[in-house]
Length: 136
Image 1 (cartoon, rainbow, N blue to C red):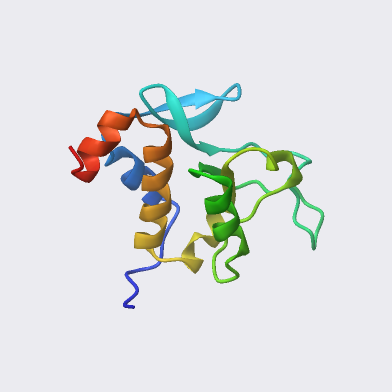
Image 2: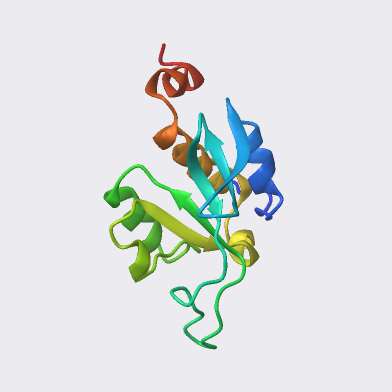
């Protein structure tokens, strides 16, 4: 497998805004959130005591929350040791993974695009997702 260039934090905006009917809004108060027809699929999470670096005890200040289709998809991303995705107890019953923007370089841009596109498809109306993927 040939790796494209490493993912960067700025790729998030490029990937999200390249998907149909996406807008940058807010949720959870004032948190920037990419939405498709009003439904959030990627959120920039505020530092919170529920998400801390296990080595330093410091709250993460660069977390992104990305929706996933199912619990099985969440487990697959979190359990793959080569990927920087993780979860916390606060999200135990929510189909989403977390990733630090500072660790995005551990995956390539195509991998990030795949995860974000799946997040978008999870929240998009089914006809819109089918049209995007050519399943019309």
